[in-house]
Image 1 (spheres, each protein chain N blue to C red):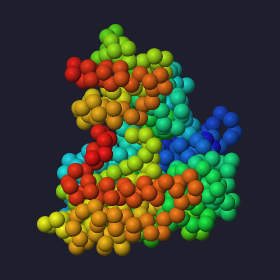
Image 2 (cartoon, chains in turn red, green):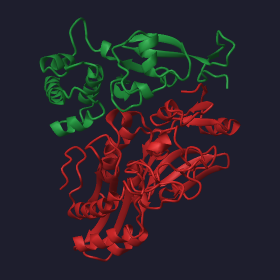
Image 3 (cartoon, rainbow over the protein chains, first blue to last red):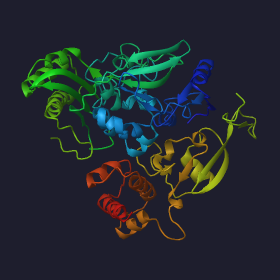
Image 4 (cartoon, rainbow over the protein chains, first blue to last red):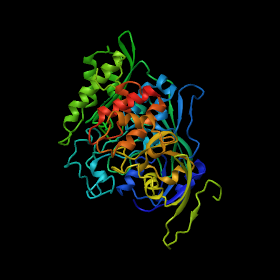
Length: 338
Length: 172
């Protein structure tokens, strides 16, 4: 790890001020990803601004319904919070599908949003990577790309976003609240992360010196028909090859509302309004689900080692929609897929 | 910025710009004060500065769980925690579990069930198990396995580890 200066932020405004005063500074909260990246010298901040003591740990029910989650709520507290388990089981399930107990105890909600990709070449500083070093090239395109993206890729980057929590937040239409030098603003979860395009070094639309302060969940919570189905190389403590968050409103066997978000396949949690539109008004059955899967994957593109993900994604979407429709969400401890 | 929350930066003995920061931790019930560089992990502070080598350095990247300690009662990876950020926290390592010469029930259960071979992962396994039992969320065997998945055992002693945890859970 490189040497760095350390300071503590007194409040959110102070954090923003300190960041604006030092362009090479980074915020640190749980640190589970940032400290790891610093050990690999992928990240080399000259200063860390410790925001972990800021008062952003509340989970509150705002007037008008929904839930507001402070950015420093640890992932484990969020997953096990009674209101989240009861009202937003999709979110709880997705969080518990990710990482390990120890990491969830440390990792913050805001930090989970800002995780960097686990692309092997992003981590390996001996190889080119346009995300780590813009313009250096992409070693994944012609390399070992089993874990890389199949949707929304660009010529210069095929990295995936690693979070499980964010896939559920995208499906639930959450909003990210941020504070920066210009004040507060809210960013729709689906607009928070970016596709790589020709600027893969930018993972998100968070501005320079902006800090995530909260996540807001809307009142609609899909607590009856939902699932988070994550497929990976081992049953626990591994990143998704393909993950699907599915949430449905069903009346009399007919789908009235559908949310479908994918993880492990793109540079951001992948929502596709056209695929969701294919589901609405149709009967909740496999043929319908297969049509939606075909729409999601219409432009999917493999890069060799990850070609299998296209068929895996199709099957996972169908299975997840089936689980959601049946009201039999995937257990995150008993891993048999129903 | 000169208030009580601002870390106290002291001049390095050398003329380099290395920042040294005062940190107070309660480790296994004893208050310990350290002057440390900000990039010192909690793991390194415990092992190298406080001589508590029960906590092991395995991967040093949060992937193996050998460094697991209880921070304010909850299992965390001490290799990914910067010690300066834990000022005022309560840390329990494997050395802090026994009471008055009597092993913690989880330690005793690990012995009774032969829940290790080489033993390198064991301090981390035991700290995770203590945290798991105290938070009470895992009840079934599948839930225990899932909650313990952050602790890797290269010897593959998992069946006996799970059996030990189940027994300790019943006893508490």
